[in-house]
Image (cartoon, rainbow, N blue to C red; front, side, top):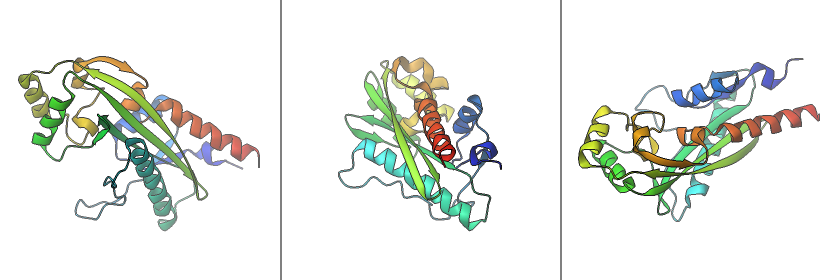
Length: 209
């Protein structure tokens, strides 16, 4: 009988970066997309709860995305396979910098990160048979001092759009980074070590049956 990991997994994300990273480590996946229309209500509430800490926030949202994907799987009567989801947050002085609402907000985030060291947290969650497991990757990133011109040019490129902290480590923002301690793939949006650990745990659990 073909096992769930032999068929691959479902990726509950629209992020092309996460697709590339899964392909990089040879994981077969099928896209499991949520709402099809922008005006539809969100499948997962990504609002920060009162007094919520950054690590608790990213893990809660990643697990909620995996659970929403599992519900969608059942609703659409798709073949069962594990559902993988992730969430990334950039934090500065323990404050969460999410995705900028607009270009002005993006410029403000980059100005705040300029010359500073910040933390990038990415939680990855894997759900199968009503059970969800999750892990968190923590990385530190040091930005150089950015000039107003550098910020304006980067924001105008559009690369800041829909990115936690208003930058993409794998893109033009790489020239801003003096040092990165931790997981490069985690800063991109899907920590490959933690993802592999969750998949191996699921495989071991399946083989023990």
